[in-house]
Length: 586
Image (cartoon, rainbow, N blue to C red):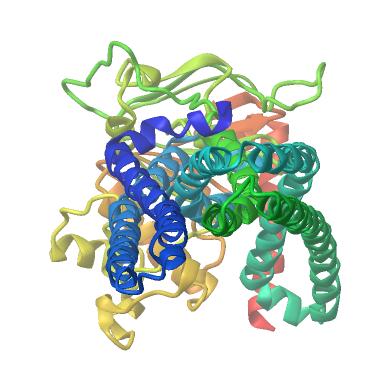
């Protein structure tokens, strides 16, 4: 009940309709229980007296009750089905919004398949339970109680026997819950893992084919699928065991009651009409009693789904909006790092921070290149500028304002990023380019494409309205990078952060992009992670990052002359560049 109770904020707008659905279903059950009473009156009255004309009255009454029951069932469906879909939509929207707000560190930990299974399978199960399982579980339990009342009123002895022999059903159901909850949770987690495996295989299909590892991926998938199959069989066995008792106990109860009822009737303690009504009522109760099994299993599955849903919704959003937000009245684009530290929450104790006390001041309109060996913390430092991760010490300022004092929307409107690993969305080229500035004009799109040397987009089948495939994998790596760069440029930010956005470009295209970028960078503050000497040439100054610390800042020519580590880094970049050129020639 604690787990299911957490759904109340989502269910509250639909609660009145769900309650009305329960009332309609309850009336349907009570109407069904009244029919045996009509049969009792018919058998003990007109039929025993030989008055056949009264049969027509009973026929009309039973027909009316049957029609009333059908109408109530139809009303129950009408009341609950639409609100259930609204509740599911509200939960899915809330989950998606929360996923968008959660920091990147959360998404680093959680497999996408697990999130997908919660957003689709678990929410669908919750919706079906609210619209069907909950209503029938409550109504059937009430129907059983009312039906037992009718049985006792007909024959106290038979009613008592019916109740006593039905007690094992409750005991078996409680034992079933303890076992089934564990298995159901394991099954749903395995479904999430399997979804992750499918997603990774689809996204990495080129790699699997290129390395001939399709059979290996299939074997791994088959192993996970087999584990899930085993769990599902274990679930099925648990449910089958429950059904065995839910069918056996009522049948045994029916047989014993029939024996006692016949003996009572032969002794004159029970009329034929009462005996008929008793077993007709027991027949009406048959479905409510038997349905308890699958309704309980559905309820326990839903409890697991609710637990899994709130595992995500309970994740705290550590990148929070400020209580007293500030705005930048006169934006210039000055970017400053003040003693910035960062370490991942799960980093081993005693290890150094990944970003370990960075102090760096980038003047408005200046282009700063950030260079360092692999693993020195360059990409992490750039991700901190837009609060993709939160600094664990120090501060980052824009025009003298701590970025934690800015609303996230304002912060990310002032800083645009282009990553080395360019991600595009299943939308048109135009929509991808204007992602950071949806109100941009066609001229803005054209200018951004020209700067990024992405004119190839105009030659696609539908031009700029061509829908790019999932993650842009229908394009080459260089084409994706150029569109991602165009997206950053089209946003017209005060500060442009580029994390080696030219790594997949050929030599000639890179030179054209760098020449066009110089025009943009004359009026925009830029922090560029440089993995190529040519990218360093774009910068006014260079910051050298070593083991998470800035060890030198200055013009390229000055650092080459005075800093040994910088010379080593540049020589490493030139060696990598030489290898890349040789590969292009081949």
